[in-house]
Image 1: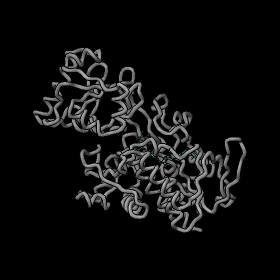
Image 2: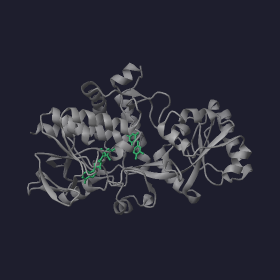
Image 3: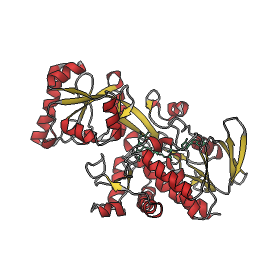
Image 4: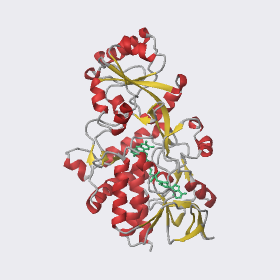
Amino acid sequence: AGLTAALAAHEAGATVLIAERETRLSGSTALSSGLIPAAGTRAQQAQQIDDSEDIFCADILHKNRDSADPIFVQQIVQQISKTIDWLSESYNIPFRVLDNFLYPGHSNHRMHAVPETTGIGLLNRLEAAVAAKGIFVVTDALITDLIVDKNDMALGALCQRPNKDVEHIAASSVILACNGYGGNPDLIAKHIPEMKDALYFGHPGNQGEAIIWGAALGAELAHLSGYQGHGSVAHPHGILVTWALMMEGGIQINKNGLRFSNEHQGYSEQAVSVIGQPDQVAFNIFDQRLLDLGRGFDDFVKAEENGAVLRAESCEALAEMLAIDRVVLEHTLRECQDYASQDILDSFGRRFKPEQILKPPYYAVKVTGALFHTQGGLKVNARAQIQKPNGAAFENIFACGGAACGVSGPDVSGYLSGNGLLTALSLGEIAGRFAGGRV
Ligand SMILES: Cc1cc2nc3c(=O)[nH]c(=O)nc-3n(C[C@H](O)[C@H](O)[C@H](O)COP(=O)(O)OP(=O)(O)OC[C@H]3O[C@@H](n4cnc5c(N)ncnc54)[C@H](O)[C@@H]3O)c2cc1C
């Protein structure tokens, strides 16, 4: 978010400084899969993908059950396609749309990725663009507080260096791009108690300062219980196993050999379902066709290299390997076949397709549920300015990415794939343009 904001603010004429607490730029963006949803981009047109902003808005609102502000959602959706096209044309960051499977809840293929198809690839390209513009990046610079006058105008920020020296950074505008509070166990216990003991899979440096400073200033905070979870992190390896396996026919079973949810509802809420199973684990079950699909993802390859992917020649061998009752496992697999051949919804509401029926040899990965990032945060207006509960804006304090309240509503199930980078890049550009334009 911060890099996008910096590019936009620089274009608007500002002298920009990025303060980063780590020794190098990283954040959750670097850990992410780097997939950004957008409708109506040039990349989609080039791949002849028919999509529209209206359908994308409807998908977001359907997923969060209309619990996010529809006008804000529309603004974000309209912005993200412009942001993708702008980054591609002005900074030579190429995007292509993943078109080999649909992420849960998306009506069309709209996940944009840089050629590396990784978050680190995206970050490296944004960092190179920032460097080419001569924008200042100060690392090992922990911002510990904002300096704000009695009229709610930011004057700058306090910055602590590794030797504990404190520097004052003067600024005509401040953009908060320090993500949410996933790395702060106290805030998680307070706002998202169901994940207080769960694995946190995001950047540890995201400690929630934006909402702490915002609360102290009397700014409005919203949807602090909202977050992105993920129900498919290889255990104990700690490697993301792509949800594409589930979308294309794979299933999740628990240690008793039983399915426990509709895997197609979304990987975010599946974190809670998996954590609710015996020993807080589940097994992803898939076959050769899906193994080949998984091998298209870097993380999956890493999981395989680390021995997380197990193979069994038959259902019986699979049951033995996973220490599951064979009769129960056979029944579970047969049920999925029956749902597919009879073309009926299963008891959780999932529709199985006949061409996706799992066939031996089978593969299994033991997984657990994890917290990826928080989705609640500072409420922002159409200029990405933070605001008070009465709607009054803080004129020169902006928020973007995980620092701002996103479009997922107050619940884990409201997270539509890609909602994270969606508001990182779109709000980043908006914040940068308005903050830079104030100079
Ligand atoms: C494994 C994983 C996969 C994901 N995949 C996707 C995906 O494919 N698509 C998607 O849309 N979303 C995905 N997400 C979510 C996505 O990564 C985040 O929503 C997004 O990166 C948020 O961007 P950001 O700029 O707000 O935060 P970050 O990228 O985390 O950047 C915040 C930066 O601020 C720095 N910082 C924090 N506090 C301070 C401070 N006090 N002083 C100075 N610096 C500070 C941090 O060190 C960090 O570098 C994924 C998340 C994870 C964990």
